[in-house]
Length: 353
Image 1 (cartoon, one colour):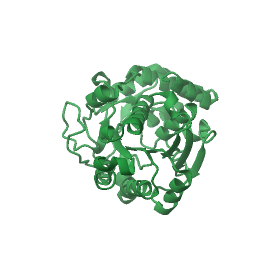
Image 2: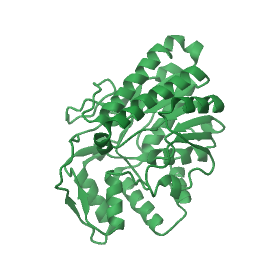
Image 3: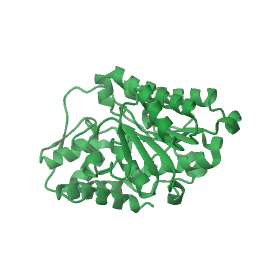
Image 4: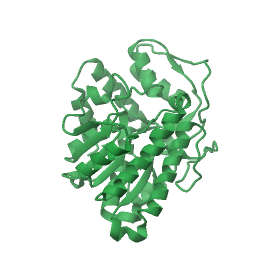
């Protein structure tokens, strides 16, 4: 991404109070964007949004993406040039507990966002952040490509596939490339997931559960130690989103499609491997054990083929999994020591700028 591109740009970020959204909001502030965020209250306590004082330096609006009327007014008042849609119900386990709200937020929330952009006008680039879990998971040993079948076993994964389809329909019907000279909007989706970094308190999230157990000095409970995931530092995924948005803004429909952002194959590791590395880095004789309780279905194998992003966007991961785990430990230890967590988080971002 080009930091100079963002200076003075009017950017609307939904989901700015969440884990990924908070990291992105700080990054956009650092590069001088005129930033408005729209999201529910932070989903956890503590939260990165609060401990890093993310609201300072932006306009933070607390609202529900399911409230189409209110969101429409926000778009009309702010007149954004770039929209990055991250507002979501993002936890697989929660989707089993409350599938209706998951679909309302992840599907109808996408509809509300696209409809506001369609009716208000003026937006040049829109990136809808979905998930690596939007694919029909066939437990393959190779990575999914953007042209592979969408699906999703659980309500969360399926709702993100639905969000992809909604976006494609709006792009075809209302923001077609053949009419770009009239509407001027380029829309893409970005598929990443299993992002890790300091400041993640997500309920039922692996890293969040590990960190909480370490802070409380109790054994870490792990549901699926043999499941493999494409672990990726959050800043690598966000760098992909920003790079994509720049290309949509500057080059339009040529980049208006789906994009994968994931780690190198060498960083696709089993859950147990990641846990062992984190506990070893933490020290203090930390241990883990497998959770024997019943848990609903989760995919065993998942990885992404990101060749298109590397070739067409010039994007590639900058932070290895080992470096990412070290960052989690150092960030958490700084939090324990009551450091200025906005400065700590901004320093991590600055290393990629």
